[in-house]
Image (cartoon, rainbow, N blue to C red; front, side, top):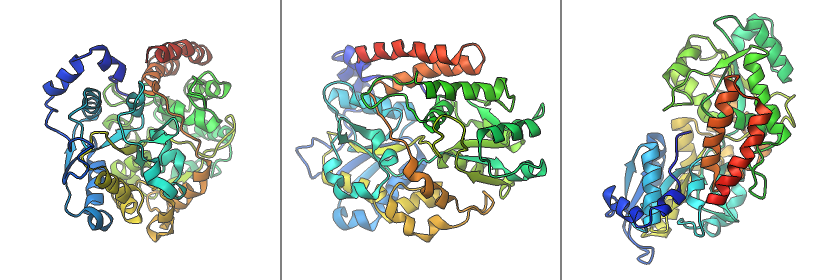
Length: 441
């Protein structure tokens, strides 16, 4: 994850936050005060072109136009860090925020620091539609103290994928039942130039997925640090051992400013240096887009058993649309969110454009989601996602989530995955760091 700017950091500067908002050129942005309530000119901020296209499609949909056809929305794309930091600056200063904004799951914690959340609560607006979504993916990441502040459209169910052709040629029996079977297969096919997995040492993602799979999370239901749970330690040790004990994995090619799937990471899969991976739909979409020559050679399954509680899946990633308290037209702002995230038309657009599998259950009736996936050997991957969706673990948000995951990356993931620290010691010592962060918020 990237270094974050905290709400507390802005508040410490006092009036500097307001001055900073003007210096950033934000004073004229946004739809006006909430009291106006019926502005016909709104703004949407996003950080990803695909996500903004998703919002634009919702704006052009019948669901939105039938209610607010006279409303004009300006869509702005800013770089990831810049957008989140400008949004936070504008909300802290009290002016300059857009009406609607995309907030990425790992940055939402910054917006719930302090006594008041500067976003509009959406629980009442969602109403009975809450029964139509998978909450751990669609609303939990943008929820705090019983209120919902954002809605996402992606069902980020984690699965395991692998090169069926290479493994079958090696005589491996598929699908995998246990992680021991995976390790045995990896030892069969691993050579000096080929491994099963690329494990990240600059991102908390692999550990986060495996600890959920094992049955735990970074925070418990009371918001306390839970990274020292034995199942979390087991997951961290498991990833370490894939590299250094079992020798079926290597450190993922990466760079500090793009620590998940930079060009060299995908190039290593194109060169068949790695032949298996695990992750959510957005992760697998990289392979479809960037490793097209291997279409039909891959297969996919739920996560094997043998690690902690062995949940068949985990939850990783997501972006939610939120309405700022400065929105000049909350009704129209909500209509955009609803049209994108809570209609078949909206979620199917994103599925067709970005293979984002929807968290909106009524869409599962559509044939487009049930089609065999040619890239993954004809598997009905949508059916697999929906079959394991009920096993998604709940997401437990925290005001210190961004700072905690940054600290875990720096003081746990990188040293452990470079064989320079003990997993149990690093995760246990992190407790004090997180407690200090919570005191300072």
